[in-house]
Image: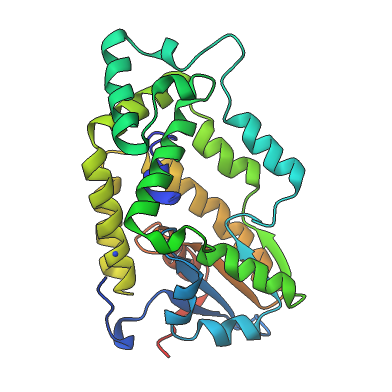
Length: 289
C-alpha cells in the first residue's frame, strides 16, 4: 500500500452480533504486572457513541490511569500548523504539473463528481491532501452522523484528560503525518489517479469494513481487513508499526494500568499486536461483558 493510499483504510459497516463474539477489547495480564491493562481496537468510521457498544470498555476505562492512543490527539496549535504545512506543495510545483493532460481530465472529472470542484482549486496542495478532502466527503455522505461527532479514539482521550488521567501516544503526530504525506509526489499522484479510477470501490470498501468491525468478531474483521490490504504496503503500514508499538506497550503497561487504543486492523493475525504480546508471555483474554 502506498503511503497515500493508506488513508482509505485509516482516516482510516451494520451487523451487530451478540456479546459472545465481542473481541474488540482485550485484558492484558502477566505474573509480574501488579494490575491488568487493556487494549481496544477502534474503527475510524465509528463515532464516540459506539464506545458504549464495546462490552467492558467503560469499566476498563475506569480501572486505568493512562490512556495511550496511536498518537496523542490533543494536539497543540504548533502541531496542527506543522500538519497543514505538510499538505502543501513545494513553492515551485503545482498539482497539475504532476499529471499529463489526459490524467488532469480524469482527476478533474473525479473532483467535480465527488466534491463539486475542479483540480485548479487544489493546485497548491499535495495529491494526498486531495485524497483526504474527497475521502472526508465520501465518509460524510455515507455516515452523516460523523459530521459533528468525535472519533472513538479522540473521545476517549478527551474523556481521559477531563478525568485527570494521563494521555500518551505509541508514535508522534509527525510519524502519522509522515505516513500519509511522506511518500514522493509521484507516488501520491499515482494514488490519486487510482482513487479517481476506483471511487465506487472505495465506498464499498468503507462500508464492508465498517460492517465487519460492528460484528465485533475480530477474526472476521481481520479477514476483511486483509482482503482490502492485499497488494498494498502492509509491511510498512501495519507490521513495522506493530513491532514498534509492541515495545512501547510493554513499557507503558509495566509502569501503570493502561488502556491502549489502536485501529482494530493492528490487532489480529500472526504479526498483530495480540499475538506479539502473547509471544512476550502476556496473557490476553477478550472481554465479553
